[in-house]
Image (cartoon, rainbow, N blue to C red):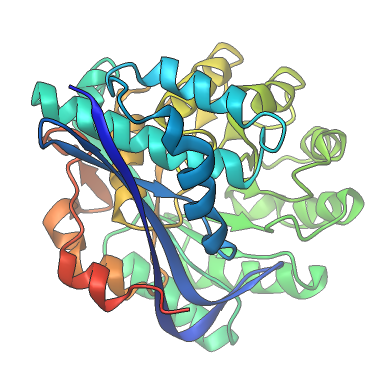
Amino acid sequence: MKIKDVRTRVLRVPVKSPITDAYFSHKARNHVFVEVETDEGISGLGEAGQYFAVSSVPPLIREGFRPYLIGQDPAKVRELWDTLYKRSFLYGRRGVAIIALSAVEIALWDIIGKSLKEPLHRLLGGRRVDRVRAYASGGFYKPERDLIREMKTFVKSGFTAVKMKVGFDPEDDVRRVKVIRKEIGGDIDLIIDANMGYLPGTAIKVARELENQEILWFEEPVSADDVEGLREVKKNSGIPIAAGENEYTEFGFRELIEKRAVDIVQADVTRCGGVSQAKQIASLASRRGMQHAPHVFGSIVGLVASLHLVASEANGYILEYDQTEDPLREEIIDQYVDLKDGYLAIPEKPGIGVEVPSRLLTKYADKS
């Protein structure tokens, strides 16, 4: 079997209200899909974890990656990853190049699974659990009454863990977290995410103010580039620290892990380099006694790929289940995800096991 073609699709899905965190405000859900086609009629689907500069991915894949993929055996996924990584080294190593590489790599795994008629988790060593706990990821900045209503809706839906955003005004952040803790009760795990919105000293102060609120973890308290600052927050916080959604490849994660700057790593399969890289990162973290809770903020492709991954890991902790508005995901999610009492069943379809209907690809195709 040989790779015949590599295609990309950019989708822009408008949302009714902006999705706002400490750094950005999303007015649309942007998705980039990569389809790798083989000469035996088997195609694989991957996703690039892009938020804004989505138009940069297609030419990068077309000009930088496609020439080295055509005619190659898709089963040699690790060899192909290494080739593309080295070929993009002068302009890549992090950021968009690795995000694009992630999508290609996911698609290759999808092909392998389909050709062998095996689900991805089995290719990664088999599932270690029958189901994976999920947390409701939302709580983006909004009026307090709306935030309370949202968090309570998550709990009523069966989730036993929820996430809300901080990273704005420290004093008000602390107050809002305490309000939400009171409203959802003490039996629900509460996660706070600053999206790199604080400086280390402020993050330490916020953490100390919230130590008695039973926070499951404090996510991205400072800049992803400030590993020493992250270490300082971890050292001075009674709350577990999580980070990694904005880090790339095992090389980038090594410093984070070896310096023990976090308790929980959050490698994103659509951003960190793909499935193999996320698996390697999780293994590195496991050797240091750290858990892996993947970052997931994209389409159904990234979500299901991450579910396979966590199910196969010794230190797979919990899966982010994005609850923000995304009409594309909402139209097809029931076909691919079985959520019950806050837990996700492990998929058994070959490969990633996800297909995006052509009608949706047409409906949300980028017209810019």
